[in-house]
Image 1 (cartoon, helix red, strand yellow):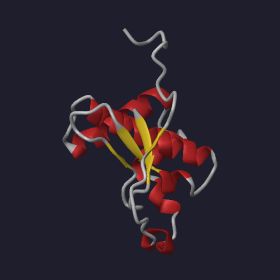
Image 2: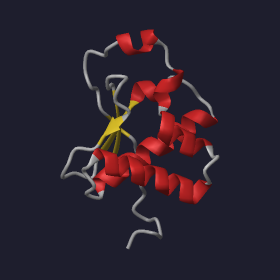
Image 3: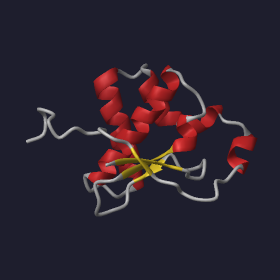
Length: 120
């Protein structure tokens, strides 16, 4: 399950252990609409998906995220750069000052369709 939420800017997303949920920072999605944004979102989702598979050590997950992206896209791809820099490199200091009053979770419908052929 994928949710959008009003998270602090220093948090890209999180996976509550023991669930199949990923909560993505809505504010990061709204910061830009570009190829770089897509690369950032993909890198964040790979990272959180690895957590959902049971990898809890943050260093190991970062290394695995880098390896997955580099092996599949090549070392010069924007997604690999996103793994290294994250979406925070292009934000201003003011972006970090604003805090939303509540999480306000919103379910992303049809994020993972059950009729997909890759699910066994």
